[in-house]
Length: 90
Image (cartoon, rainbow, N blue to C red; front, side):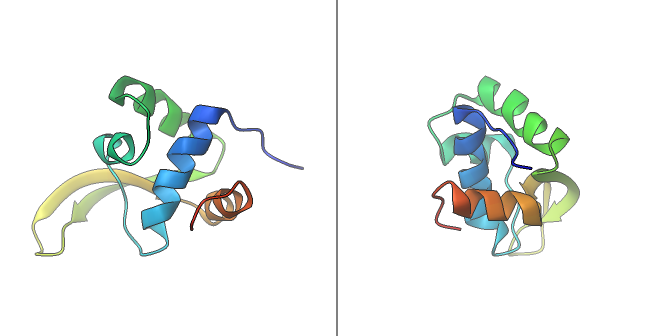
């Protein structure tokens, strides 16, 4: 059974997949910066991906220097696979 995703969801998924493979997560702003989506579109879109099991929320994230960086989303294994299937560089 394939999962249907909108064009916005594809963009957000590819943005997430680009960093998720390295073990990173993105904030909504990070997804907006790596796609053509506006910030208000990203919130709804990424949450829809999470409901479909393609992205997951993580809180208490840290940056490379060990400082608290807040929270963000990354791809699940299913999300990563779908991003590759739809043409992401994941």
